[in-house]
Length: 194
Ligand code: HEC
Image (tube, rainbow, N blue to C red; front, side, top):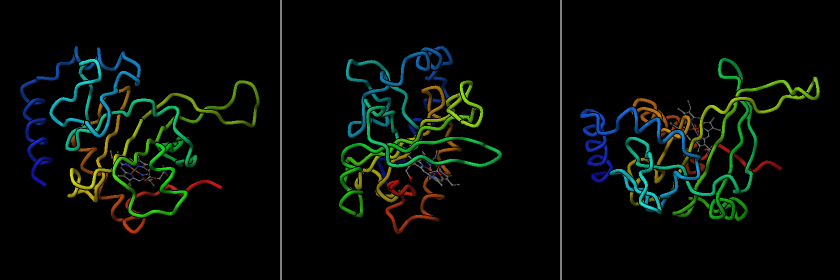
């Protein structure tokens, strides 16, 4: 799809000329995830601006940012990843995603979003047999916009580490894996946990 390709070229060019400086990256990562508002829907691929005009880090290829207020979304399901990652995860959905799941609506409507939070496993300091979230590793985002993301099944992807988008190579893997396994569920792995 043309806009995505253009955005991709613009972004790569920006990275090449060092438009996104290391200082900026550090400054961005020091902000709480919340400041990565700008949000979706309006997730400009060409250097998204937050509600207050602050620069928000957007993922390569897709221009997805960490959605505002995602921490208060509903839990869809927890997940656990074995070695070598050894992570605890929790998938959250915004109200549009939750409603679609409850009504078994496929494909998901535009505006539906999922966020997956991942943590290293940690033994509870309070109770021997309990495992609790340790260090956070990634925040991953899927945003449905069937027109903007027509060439990737209608979903835009973003993976963030300390609030900063992961590199281009990582973003080239998202759609392929989701498409190979769960295309028939509109590219979404997670089922609503009972
Ligand atoms: C090799 C396969 C694979 C790749 C590559 C992959 N994912 Fe996923 N993704 C999964 C699996 C499996 C789940 C289900 C939850 C879990 O087990 O962690 C998932 C779940 C998700 C979810 C929660 C919604 C859902 O589909 O369940 C989001 C958001 C997500 N991935 C984003 C991304 C992003 C962003 C990228 C690329 C940076 C990516 N994924 C790359 C396998 C993959």
